[in-house]
Image (cartoon, rainbow, N blue to C red; front, side, top):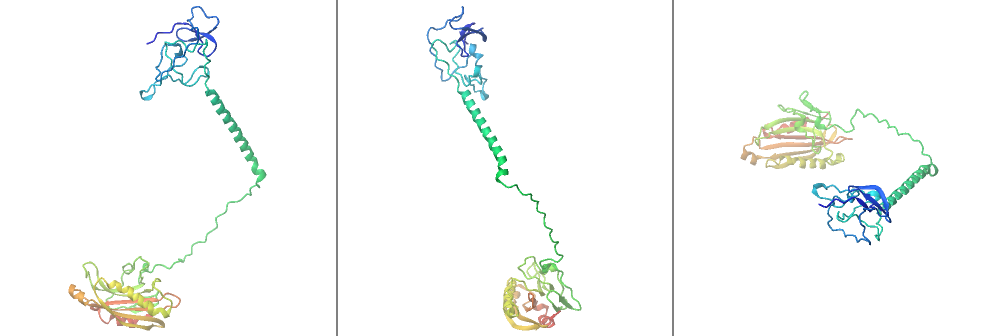
Length: 366
């Protein structure tokens, strides 16, 4: 620990060419010219006093007259001390001051001592303030010019009204697209006949055949053929352990995905539909043959008949199925101004071998 500096006259640490009184604890307001040193003042060196060079790691001081001028910095967070740094100094002397230690009293001396260097911080701050002031003036000027500019260079904006929303027409009660055929209820027999008003066809219902629910014969896939009338009869329940094998008579408007350009294309379109439908029989091994492929009339409308037979005998005998063959017919009926009507008949032989002929002979326009 260093000794307390005794009271006395010392060179003014605030930069004036005077002596200032140190009362042992702090600097006072009492000053004295250098030419008339006061009695009892501390002896001053006769020549310029050489400054002690600051150490790379200055040590904190205590007890000297500079402690009131440059108060010690508090300890940094996490226990890291800040040596010789001050946040402020007297009379505008800012920045870090090197801590010289209390044994050297008090520095600097004013004999041949060079005047203390003044901090450039006030000049820097003053320059920044001046630049800010100039920028503020320029901004205000630009703002004022821009406020006046539209009235000189631009025409006065025309007053516009917000566009009122145009009234929309109420949706028509009639749907723009035809309803899905699979959504309608299938017609029930009347006097032993089914009449399909959508295709304009009617036919006799074989004895014991029933009308199924619409969702049993129509799916949601628009690529599949939809039916607007149907009757069915079961040939064998759960023939494969899960599904029933049924005979069916269906009518419906031909799906638009099939090519059709009028009565002259009936034959080609009928062949395309038959080839497409034949794949539904592929779950059971079979052979097939065409019995008839000819034009016919249904009422006054042109039509084309493809009559066929599928033979499942080999697979049926091996697995014990109740049917061996299936007799069927596909009739495509022209409907001027619209898509053609389609009749599809497929009857396993255990449901009757004459059913196809009876239905074909009963087919009429309605």
